[in-house]
Image (cartoon, rainbow, N blue to C red; front, side, top):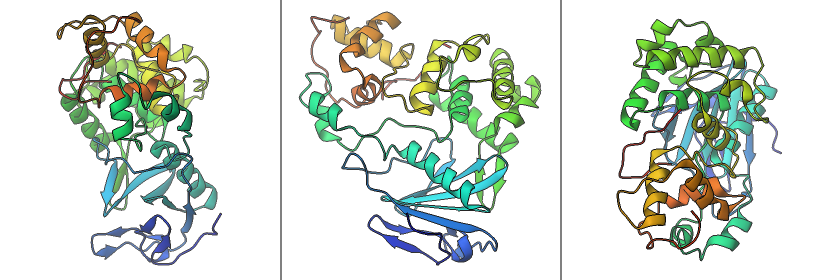
Length: 331
C-alpha cells in the first residue's frame, strides 16, 4: 500500500485525486491548505470489473468533484476527508489510523471490494433481471459509509415519499450535522442522542419518529447495538420494524442477501410480476419468496429489478422502490 503523501495531486491507474497541497482538498480553483494532516492514498483493484463510481448522494453529503467524489466522514470526533476518482482513493486526516478508517468506509460505500462474479454468472440470462444485469454490469447496491447514517435516514424515509425525506435529511444536516472546511457530515449518534424530540420535529420529522430516532441514537452511542447480529435492540424500539432493520442490513452493512421487503416499490413490482395486474400489491412474504431464487444476492437482484426497463408477463412460480413511483415503506 502506498505511503502517505503530501503532493498537490496523486496520479494512479484510476485517474487524479483532487487534493490541494499539504493534504487540503481542491475546491474549484481555491486550495485549503492544512498543515499537520496526513494524506493516505490507495489504488484499489476492483474484485469485480467493470467498476464505476455511483452518483453523488441525494442528501448532499457525497459530492461530485470533477469526475470523482468527495465525502467528509468522522472517526470518533476526528474529521476525515475522502476523495475517490476511478479506483484511486485518498483520505486526509490528522492521524494515519483515522485516514485509513475513512478509506475503508468509502471502499465499503462504493462496493469496490464486492466479488460479484458468481451473481453475474448465474443471473445475466435471468428472465426477469437478465437484461438489466447485462446492460449495467458495473452496478453495486448503494450504501452509506456508516450503518448509523443508514438507520437515521431510514427512519426519516418511513411512510413518506423520497423528496420529503430528503428535505428532512438536509435540514437535519444543516441544523445538527458537522462542518469541516466546506464539507458537511451527517449528525453522529451522540449528537442526536442529546437532541430533544422538538428539535428533530423542527426539521420536519414526525413526532413518533423523532422519539424513535433519539432512542436509537442512545443505543448506538452507548455501544449496545450489535450491527452484525439480529438488531434485536433496534427492533425493540417502537416505530422501528423489519423494513428499517433490513435497510440497515442492505444499505448500511452491505448484506446483499437482504431485501427491504416492506418497501412499497417492491410490493408493487412483485405484485405485478406475480399476477400480471399493473395495480396489484404483493405482501412482504411474497416479496421475500420472489427474491429467494436470487440467494445469496437478493438485495443486489432487487437493485437490478428497479432498473429493468421491461418486465415479463406474470410468473408461474414463486410467489426498493420503483423509479417512477414515490417511495413509501412501513417501519
